[in-house]
Length: 326
Image (tube, rainbow, N blue to C red):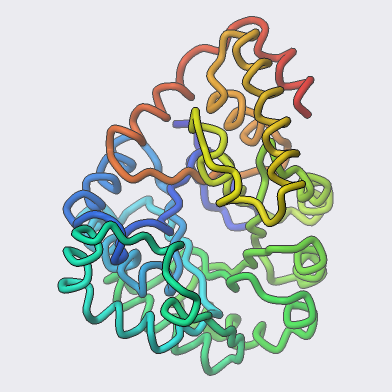
């Protein structure tokens, strides 16, 4: 696993990182399976793990903390804060041992639940809330410091006001966080973050199907800011053979556009002798300015298979494929 410099931090991170959003949760598997995924990632040389306090009502952080017992050195933990979970999700977090077998027996899926049952999270980026969130993350992760603490999808105006900066600088002085960054859903939030000198990283959605954030990479490089690329496989669209695009797209028009893109990319991958996953991940990792590209996996076999694909020698025609898709 290639190690890359991570912005101005002095850290070196694996070019592939593990996104931990799906670790834990009522609708997922048992804890042992998630721990096996984390162990497989560590064994493969992955040292960058991206989680958040809201992922699976905090269970993602708990599982990561358990997996890192005795293996903490050299690992970069990136977590996030800024969301407040609704009462329904907090209750579900406490009742998981009862709800998991019930969900399996009934064949329930998260996306099929009514919005009133799921509840919508709110956001809070006040200094007081961020400090409390960090303390909770430290407890769940069983660690005394977090290498990268990120604001979780803040609006651009919140980033620009910078009322949160002083609190995070104080946490840096205390040694509880080493660096801080911003996970951005929109370009205006990323540009606002780049105007603040203390920001060490941006997390951006970048993949073959959504290249809108690629234009921010030159500005990030000019500022010396590290970039975490997320959703590199477009939430699985770039690895699944058959998929119901209506579940992933906001409109029939978007679904039609995505279907046409997938046909084109699959054809190009086949012509170059690559899998679509190889093309998709090598597209992201080859972008100048991307420090680490996140992947997710539900099983060790799934993760190991993807990493084997990425480690294989690309065919001679691969470079032409990359130029075509960009």
